[in-house]
Length: 278
Length: 80
Image 1: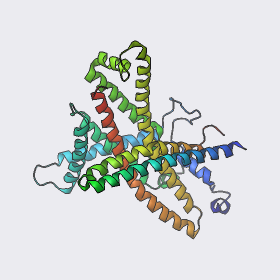
Image 2 (image 1 turned 180 degrees about the vertical axis):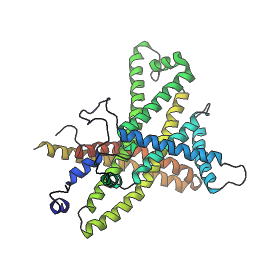
Image 3 (image 1 turned 90 degrees about the vertical axis):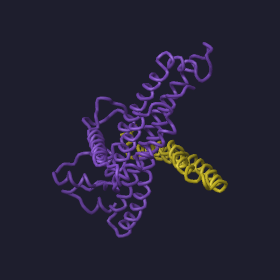
Image 4 (image 1 turned 45 degrees about the horizontal axis):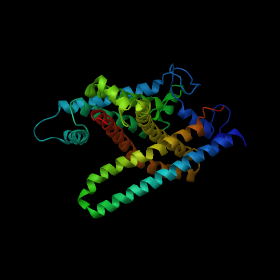
């Protein structure tokens, strides 16, 4: 690539793979060697997800304080549209007490949308800021592009599924359903039933988390590859970067909204399934 | 063949085969949606929401595969 031959010596110019690998590393407490290592924490994921949660909460609290029953302003009308959309979906799916579940769905939607939309910040923005302070850490901005972030949220949804299962059906009823649905109550079918139910819970949780991760990770990686086009430091490379970057960013707006909506809908659907029996 | 060659082949297969499934699935679903809109235009808006939801679900396995393939391409956990 033109970049690596042009500048040698004092300023190190990374190759394409090095650039991408640097941008894919997390700011974690320790370098990760094994695939699963619970002693390491990705500090950048924690920081950005908490920050987006605070931003979302502040947004909603301001909206609630400024709400009037007279003629609404544009901000109030916008918030009301979002709340009404989530409430309609919750009404269609949950047949039971919605006083906790509908706000939960709204929280999930707003939070996931804010975290996903961090993907619109330029890829090299924080590298540039850190370089002003002479630091070059690994720093990932999008918490939902980290498998730990999304699987954490979907494990939270799993906990809610189990809680509502036990609350609606009772502990005995839940265990009875684990062993007797969907095939039948004959004792020879108990193990297959249990196996199938466990697989169902695991598949729901893993697919919920990995769907969001896959979408956001792939989106970020395409942004990085488009940024590499610009690094060729030629006029056609730069032109292609601007055009491809704009098209991909516009498409990504749809993906960000869609994935947040899908996460919210699936949360509602899974909790709704806990309300019904098999 | 070297390990790097195998990883490259694997990434291509993951993305390619996943794309076949996802595209055919969305094509069939989109065709049904257009047909339903032609039969009952008043249901178009209600069905459109559900169509986008289903599109996200159909794309899920494919994008999970893309995520894993990209991870192998750039940050391969199995090799040095």
